Length: 321
Ligand code: DCP
Ligand code: MG
Ligand code: MN
Image (cartoon, rainbow, N blue to C red; front, side, top):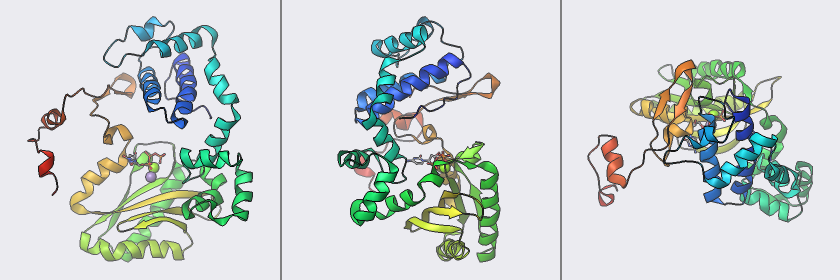
């Protein structure tokens, strides 16, 4: 388990988020959803604080419906007073956790698969590669592609390189059908300096897309830019791309008919809170152009969700359209 950097500007808040994050990931690996959620909420809350946490009261005074539990409060106190969190150190020193986390960095391998591999004594990428050479069916096709490009895919893609890819894909698209255009969504559209993958909406009339979309990926393959297919469904392509002299990267292409474009844009721009099945959350722009996400709006039943969205209620029996 590797600490992840947090977005907060306050050093102590960042430290708290980092150390609680280590514990949270350990619970996530153990499928302890209840504790994982508790830690996620605490981290989200601290990350969005407009002030530095210097005493536990800076956290306690927040109150609210999703106040931090006393167990997590004790952990925060430990971090504030000692600068360390024993439980996080235990997690980081547990070689089994570290092995599971390492294997999860292979695209296509999730915690369950990783735990299975570790149970078979496979604890490193090197060992996994050796094991696959002996037993070809140890991983599925996508996982094998993930393993092949493991090192390259660990790196995020600098946004300048995403812009290069955008330029290239648009040129291909225009040659196939000049009425079709593309929009790069995901973290790129959100202005991130680097992206985990490149998410591209290919939009136009649904009639034209039907023929053009497969032709577009076909040409990109012929150019050697698409090197491996992961998911190749109707109107959807997930794969690996590579430009000469650059690392391999992940690319997602989505065929989007004009009339669906605004919905697709909202969905694929993210981040996940803007798409959640876990709750409607108010997102406020604060001073210093920071974004603050409020806890999910509490609702008693589905009807209240429709009410919030100003849509007449539709009972489940009427939803099989
Ligand atoms: N998305 C979603 N639910 C998922 C996967 C994705 O709502 N299970 C949406 C929100 C994401 C967007 O699609 O922001 C793009 O997904 P990515 O996984 O590519 O995530 P990002 O582009 O936001 O980040 P990254 O830089 O890691 O690719
Ligand atoms: Mg992305
Ligand atoms: Mn993506």
